[in-house]
Image (cartoon, rainbow, N blue to C red):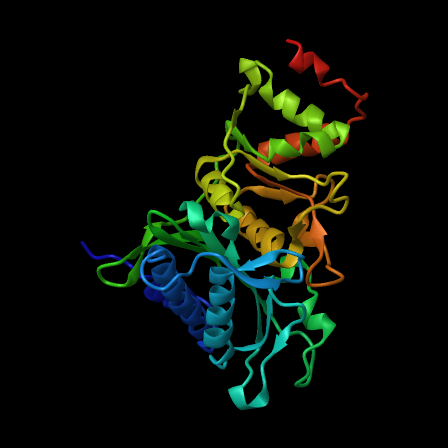
Amino acid sequence: MERTTLVQHIRQQEKANPGATGEFSGLMNEVMVAAKIISLQVNSAGIGEDIFGLTGKINIQGEEVKKLDEFSDITFTKIIGQSGTVCAITSEEKDEPYIIPPEDHPGKYIFMMDPLDGSSNIDVNVNIGTIFSIYRKKSLGTDVTDEDILQKGVEQIAAGYIVYGSSTIFVYTSGQGVHGFTLDPTLGEFFLSHPDLAIPEQGSTYSTNEGNWGVWEEAQKDLVAYLKEDDSSTGRPYKLRYIGSLVADFHRTLLKGGLFMYPKDSKSPKGKLRFSFEAAPLAFIVEQAGGKASTGVQRVLEITPTGIHDRLPLFIGSKKDVEMAEERLATPVKKGSWFKWLNS
């Protein structure tokens, strides 16, 4: 049976766009190469060279940097930075954008990434991944400006993620639907395995860190209590599924439907997840698959960031589930009203 590779699929989509130069295809090919290298490193973690543990460094987020975090960041930056397709790279692990020097022949794209999402799960063999997005340079001239780096999410031209787990899966959109590819390790090729992904309009699971209950706002507590109530007419109660790796939780939600939530709380009043490296790319993907992404009050893709490390709350998943969350979060809640669920 003839199978479609990721490279073939990207070229097919390129042919459907008159005026395409091949530069985008070249960039996506480099993303694929970097993903294969990291997949190999993840799958051999604990064998031979020690890739577990900490580097002793602290990143811009105030988090301890894992060895595999650093390896992933360096791998993507080096391969994509020398591809001649991008003029700047921003990373969750870097304080500032990396501007491509003239000798590396800058291209017209901006590449943004979380090089290794869920890295706290590295040493317990739980799925981790890479999240990325691509923008086109907007400003004239050779300098990279804030106009280029701080674009609305809706201006992305592509976004994707790679899950490193029992199999390595590469999911991406360039605005023409969402497609998933699984790595065949015997051939070293990504083959189309999930064409035209569409998220169910409503799911039956929710995903959130309930360990944060004590610092949640009353409306968030009420929302989760509502999801636990028994009401077959609305498909409740929902089941809880939470991995703790955003890329893994989102991948399950995309395939099965439901609602992923990382709300703001008293410890993180602006929210916890990063707009540029997590929320915006996943929002672009979920909308292309028929879902929705919101801060609870605003469409994520309509936000213009003020900095590359901006944070925000995130409610993402099936369209009806996100709309239900927005509606309940907008409804005034009396303190402790969720006690009716605890005492039922």
